[in-house]
Image (cartoon, rainbow, N blue to C red; front, side, top):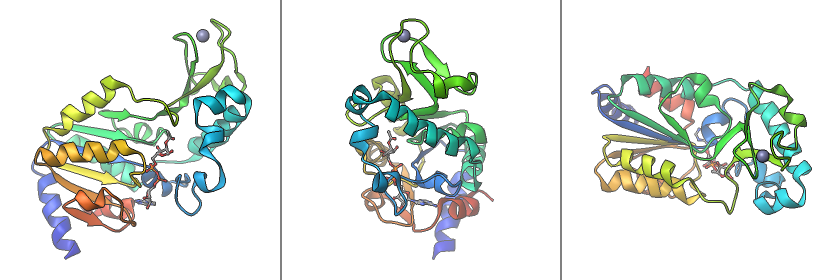
Length: 242
Ligand code: OAD
Ligand code: ZN
């Protein structure tokens, strides 16, 4: 059964069609980066209201920076895994391709994906809370120590979308319009607790795409998918792209 289903999707993948992928923290868990809501997930040990909201930052910017510095170190040490590399291969063999990731760890970029949007930002980037100043910690390793904007003196914050903040309209429109014209959408490693992945998956479904979910657990997205592989992303992507 499983082999049959893999074979069906392999055929679509090798047919040079338009393909999209939506990823969440589960895809990076095999690289050793904690998820948010799993057993060892961040939100089991930390309260997002204290660390990942504009209010938390206003109240205690140093604490928020320390938390992101801790996470940035984990991300820096981590390496892309089988799933990340398979998604690069998928980009190369598809007619057109878009990866929409909720992950801020930069691993998809490091693996080599070029057609991607990081809808929640990137942990290696910071920006000024007031002016246009941006900082890339890969260029400037001193980011851990910089709290004030060198141009206007306001606070520097992680370039990440926090709870209570909106998405960039332009980015969501780009994702939505691409999803209207695809043969296949693979969703992997997201609990779909944030509403945007489900909404995007629905757009793909309404426009005739085949939907695949890869997640050891069942989520609201599994419910609208044609296939749900209840396994780890690395294993399934390996079978799909080998
Ligand atoms: P979650 O931690 O909510 O969900 C991770 C999902 O990955 C769960 O459904 C797991 O079952 C699944 N999973 C775990 N290991 C896996 C593996 N090896 N292969 C496949 N799936 C696996 O993470 P997200 O859905 O990404 O926001 O969370 C969405 C957003 O909420 C995050 O981007 C973050 C968080 O607050 C920000 O940081 C802005
Ligand atoms: Zn500034």
